[in-house]
Image (cartoon, rainbow, N blue to C red; front, side, top):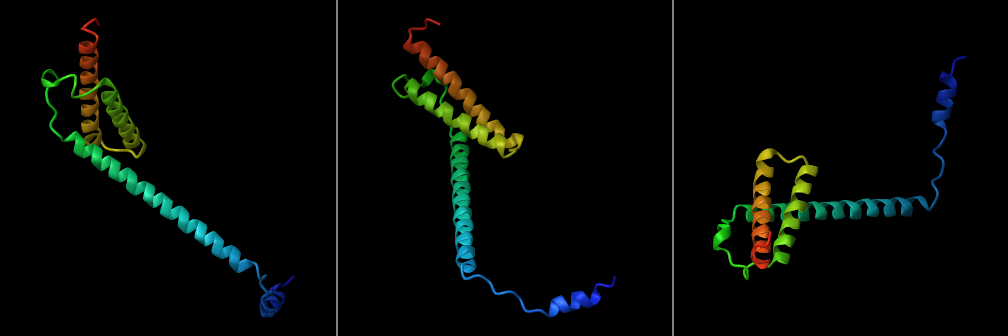
Amino acid sequence: MNTDPLREQLQRLPDPPLPDTLWPKLRRAQRRRTVRRKILAGGGVLALGLTAGLLLFAHAPLQPVETRTVQARTPVDSVARLHAVDRALQAAYARGASDAELEPLWDIRHRLAVADTSLRHSAQGDIL
């Protein structure tokens, strides 16, 4: 069975008319994709900004634990900072950060954990 004449005849036929509802549907789909793309880009910029802020915080000189006063940092503030660093570490691991990027975050986390422990000791009268 030779299909070449049939194929030629089908190609000569006019295109079927498009429904009037097609173009509005295509425009709505394009708008949804554009909005979704903008939201994702904004989220990426926000995540990048938070990461950059944490990295700047990581390079800020920290005072030794002995010279800090209990009034300067409450345990709640220290715990909040510790949670922020934990979230930054999770985000870094999720995006496949290098060891060079992770090391300052781990250093900050260690310092905050030590500071939190010393604050609890001084607040409880060194019971632990």
